[in-house]
Image (tube, rainbow, N blue to C red; front, side, top):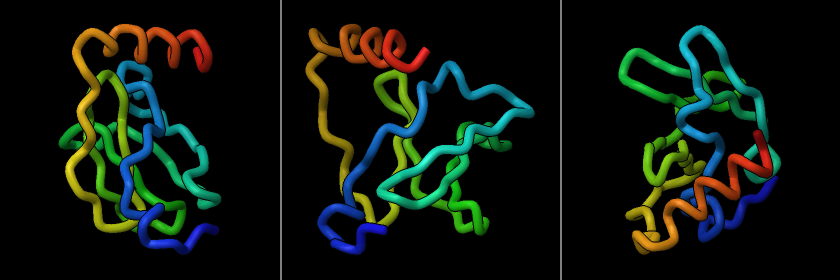
Length: 93
């Protein structure tokens, strides 16, 4: 587990938003911690496997999560957005 607050306070992509489906959850890891990504009543949700909710944001075709206290999500210039979504989809299905 990573405890450095600078690292924990950043946003990280944890799923491709279009692949998060109702009734299904995806188990994965974020900075060495087990998390689950699922479709909650207000959209995608992310929580630790102990039930602790994480900060979540849907942007650029991905579900982003933060283990700490997040700031603003960095901007991805429009000309690169399709390439980012395509490369993540091609890599992770």
